[in-house]
Length: 320
Image (cartoon, rainbow, N blue to C red; front, side, top):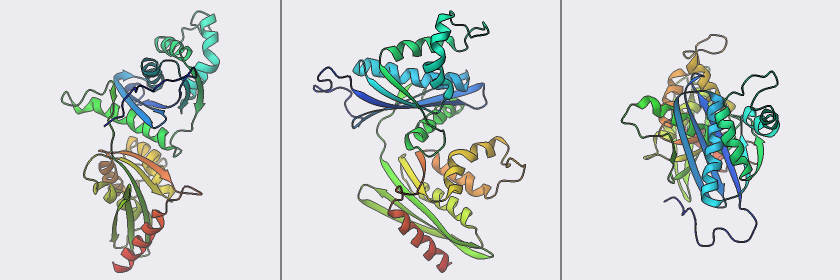
């Protein structure tokens, strides 16, 4: 169940509640059908919003996400201290640097042109004044869990437009809670005609499940992607998944590169066929029901389960 929005002790004292907001939006193509997503966190409570538009732009979806989150906060909690994180420099610079000049000039740019997306900028300006907002820029697709979740929400909202009239209305929705699962994936061996193996550890609270498999003459990269797909396939219902790997090929491939590959008909930037296409397509299908955040395991962010996943992968390769 989603936590109660307001309790009897929700707002005490004169200090506005401090809230974190993560937003994202986009189109494919641009302009074209688009979606936006926003995550609001206040203490241990979370609200998730998303929506779409069949004919829009990347910039409008970014603005819509920020405005929707601030509007919901205004209705729920009143004035808040908000740390709002966006990967859109257009949004951050517009609201912190450009907007005062636009207003002074009657909503015109320096070259006397009408400000684009003026309707949304007016709304966002009013909502920003209703709160104490600090605007932060995050690099997109850099592994930040909540930025990646906001991107997933925006993408799913956009995809809902193509699912026909029977699909749920995603113009604006608040998600209920999904079970949270951590998955660690690692691969071993492969290459030079040798079998490769993959291992995965799935953790939900104190409960774990281990999976492994092998492939004849399969590369480590192919085993990584296959292992991630098999782990996601093992989930019996939609989940919020944090998937860890220490391999950039898997994490950056799934969170960023694959979009370009698909747009180019599964060709790389230098027009070569994408390696392991079959495995990547299986991974995309396996990830579709879930909210997956793709996380690089490095430094202090290496889960203990990753070592066990590596042992499982090595054992699977030896058995093959």
